[in-house]
Amino acid sequence: MINIRPFRALSAHAVKIAAVAILSIPALVAVIHNAGPNAEKRDLAPLPERPANWASALEMPAKLNAWVNDHFGYRKEMVEFNNQLRFKLFREFPSIQMVSGRHGRYFLAAHAIGTLPFQAIGNVCGRMSPPSPGTVEYFNRLFADFHRMGLQPKMLIVPSAPVLYSEDMPAFLVDNCASMETPSNVVLNAPDLSQEARDAIFFPLREMRQIKNRATLFPRSWFHWSGAGLDDVAQLSLSHFWGLSAIPAPPLKTMAHMEPSDVAHLFPGIDLRSEIVEPDLAASGIEGCYGARCFPEFGDFGETLYDISRFKNPKAPARRLVILSDSFGSKITPWYARYYREVEHVATNNMAKLGTQQIKILKDVLFRDPGNIDLMFLYHDGGAVQNTLRFGIERLHEPASLAQAAGKAGKAGNEGSR
Image 1 (cartoon, rainbow, N blue to C red):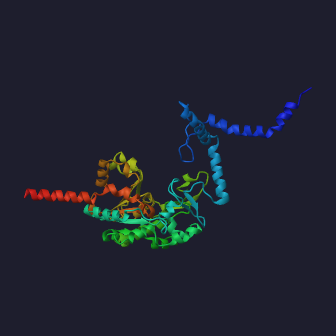
Image 2 (tube, helix red, strand yellow):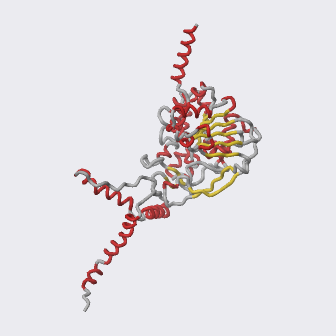
Image 3 (tube, rainbow, N blue to C red):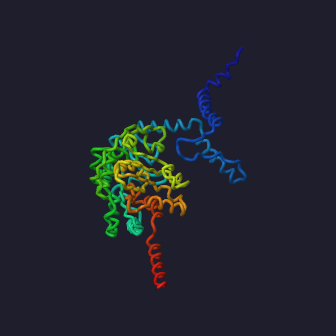
């Protein structure tokens, strides 16, 4: 006769047994298939080494727990499912870096997870955050130095999505972002901003608020700009700076396509897409080039700069436009090829990685033939007044103190030779 008591004991713990069995599957997966590249874009906790002393032994449980959490089988799928569920139910992102706006628009709220919530929005909207200290003084020095170098640069400060589409911001931020008292305008209205700097800077907030009513400037799910409205901005800036709007230039042919959000890596599992409109360079008769191969003059450090591009238009007037920018530059640069025989663009995000000799080569290439170039600095409003521009460009111009010292030394030498 079969003894059924063991089976009754097992049935009494069936739920516990099932739970252990279910949880053992991802545990086995974690052991058999160790985690590789992950969708969370962060460093996973490493497997702790064998303890060498009592102190490391006491740290072992916490380190092991962190490893298990990060390498649990199917973690990637579960993280993505959790993100999808939160987004579908509450329009909530898994990171403080993103926020849902209104009317189907989404905004980058913070540039890093270690910053305060809404840091990126505060950098551009109203008086939520002041400009970086010393910005006015730096702008004064910037233009004075470049003028001493024989160059006449202009600066286009690009209004970003929160101030252009303020009506789409979360309700409690609408009034602040609709205000004209932005950190950029605080700098431009500063009484100690030099006249030469004031004359060279253009922050077309009013104008671009009009443009966005007829043409896209920022796709609904993107941080960076893209769209047919960039053609209007190119014309506007050239007219403002150099009066080039009257130059005959046929419109560029365009192409439209759906693209995932440019900040999709911040929220794995959530699929946000927007229509992107860009110039069709081939159909427009323009030779376009992106990346290090565009500037063989740079040698190996072209790969370091990475975000660089070059465009040639044989139908345009024989003049060259040089654009130094943050990451906003690469999207608008080809639109300028409608007006110039050659357009050269270098994003300065990796400028700090270059050596002194490489900086010299870069200056020699970009600033050659100064009588036949137009030079533009192009940065979005947050980067322009929060040191991104300064850290990118400062090494390209000679500090006034050094120029003055060199001038005095030259003068003393001349007097001594008389």
